[in-house]
Image 1 (cartoon, helix red, strand yellow):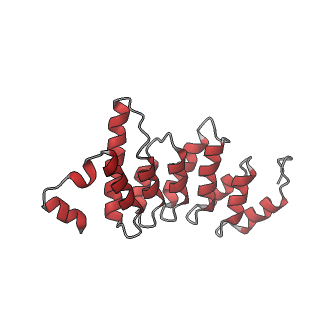
Image 2 (cartoon, rainbow, N blue to C red):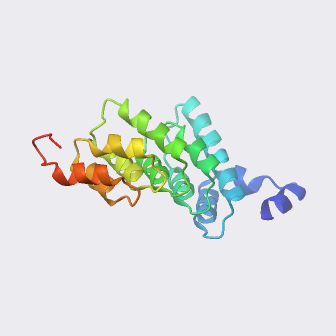
Image 3 (tube, rainbow, N blue to C red):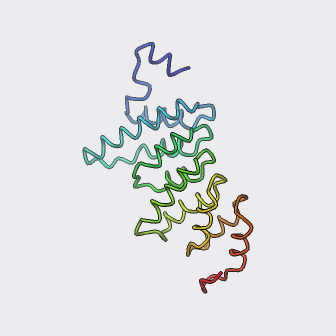
Length: 185
């Protein structure tokens, strides 16, 4: 693979020299439809390490969000990489939303994201609703998570549950019978 050749050649500049031009190259690699899960995992790990160093130095650089977003939504990103990405605290909720929407995200990771979102003080905020609707539409969401989301106060989240092909009939009936504003099923 390309990474193996780079390592054999002794070049570490492929993913460690983070100048602005290089960030564009890494982003292009992360957006490449043929990027392997190994390459995407490497990019994600390097970006998370870089962001941790920046946070330690109180540098709030947001330039790598587009790289992490590309990895989070990529069709070849492995479930383990998506789980690792989901455990990192982002100022940018779009990354978490993309993880929630990725069909490679495991049921366990989706449940973990849901629990983290439920414990936030802004459970009904637009950024949280965006993440929750991603979980609701993901075909790997558990029936329990779909049930939890089917009672969310935001109609956008509930409609996402209704669109999930794995939503049980009993939940679909509850959603169909609920009238917005009265809180009843």
